[in-house]
Every structure is written in structure tokens, then in C-alpha cells.
Length: 74
Image 1 (cartoon, one colour):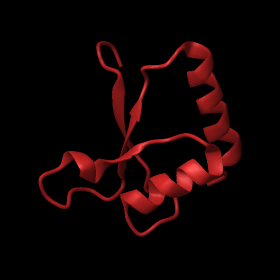
Image 2: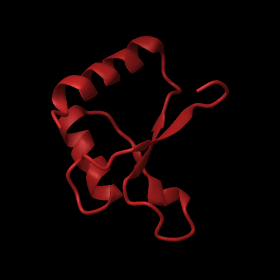
Image 3: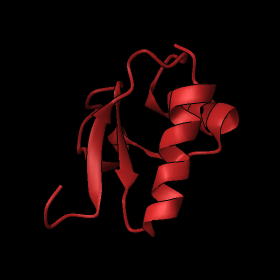
Image 4: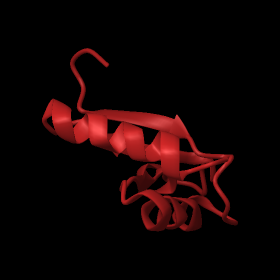
């Protein structure tokens, strides 16, 4: 996104009972890290949202996208 280094994304297809479990499963399967969306809410929030950071160089971002596409298999 223009002007931001982060994006909130729907992670509902990833296995897990909550957003923390889902981002941990994502990390284990792909090596791509994300922050559970609940870390940014004052309440319980949505358990199917995660925040991804784009403050990396393009080759790193391309590698992350490739890992998500090939290793996640949802």
C-alpha cells in the first residue's frame, strides 16, 4: 500500500483456534512472520486478521510471496 509498511490480512483459511495460533502455524509452514491482529485491538477483536510488514527489500518480499504460494497449500 502506498505510504505504509504494514497491511492487515485475512488469515481465516490457516489452521488454528485464534490469530496467535494461526500466525505461528504460518511461520512454521512458510518461515514468513506476521503479528496477530489482536495485538492491535483493545478488545478481543477479529481472530482471523494478521499484520504483515513490508519494510523489506524487494527480493525478500518476493521470496516471502513465493513461500506463501508454494508452502501454505490451503
